Picture (tube, helix red, strand yellow):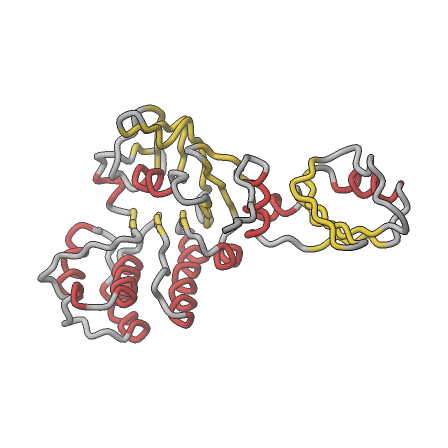
Length: 299
């Protein structure tokens, strides 16, 4: 549904994106991860048709995005920094949305009044940030989009409302095959909703995989030996993290699981456990292997 090929973008001498390629299948939720300054918002603004690329192609449903009203008629973009007309109420903004989203659904709009419980006569810019986010989703979901581009989408919402919003979005993914690309620093939350993940670092895609496949490529191992740790413990795989606490050695290793375990068993450990990895840990260790290590700060 979303296809980016060799996308590059510079602002003056600063290269924000360099040869970025990604693919988001229809009906999936793609999590875009990366540290601050990695280029996530720049990439998202290209996908939403706000920026024009310097090089490469961006297509949604096979059509170029930039300056294409046909694509934008079925695409909803909810940025972290929201903008609404200063004098418009929710009801007036809904009528504005209905004028250019051909699939706009007034019945859904009325039903969602019960979910968001905000008086539609209220002026949006006088609402709190969290309530404005609720309005953005209320209107965005009623537009019946085929594609949703979300940048820090539930920041500012309370836990109950976050759950409600994600339930509504995922319902459309399941029932209408809506395609969602979401960027967020809340990796625990993304782990619950995403089926594909891409990690952006220094303007390039570092890794891009199905979430389940990503978790089968990196392993956290807890090992202990009766004596010293053998110096040639691993003959295969790449150690992303090594930490020793007394006799317990903690390893995060990337590579073939069976070969890695065979290497360790050859050294006769007294303990060998494979521990589950979270998306947050995968993110940290993948970036650590690219020079974005976690260092202790001494002050």
